[in-house]
Picture 1 (tube, rainbow, N blue to C red):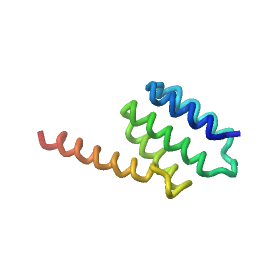
Picture 2: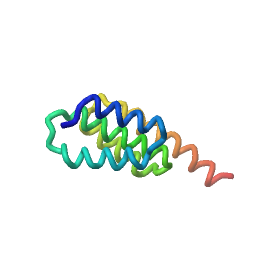
Picture 3: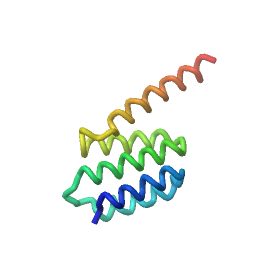
Picture 4: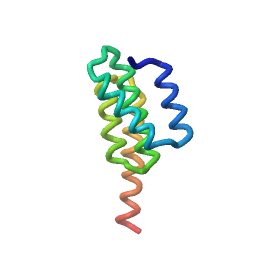
Length: 99
């Protein structure tokens, strides 16, 4: 069963830049707890997984995770993270096309 302690452990792993471990851990819990009644905690897992992908520079996967988190919890910080990711990618793309 997912709880706040698990979320805190994942946040600590993310702070130590253990991104691949965070992704694997989140995927395992999400798969196991997919039918869990606590959608907000599952949404947090998707958000944290998105942050791990962002640390790795895997923007597509990060944005997909943020969208999934936002779908499950509209009040999630993932909505803002998604918007920031779009701004960053938009800025990068303009620089790539207009050196």
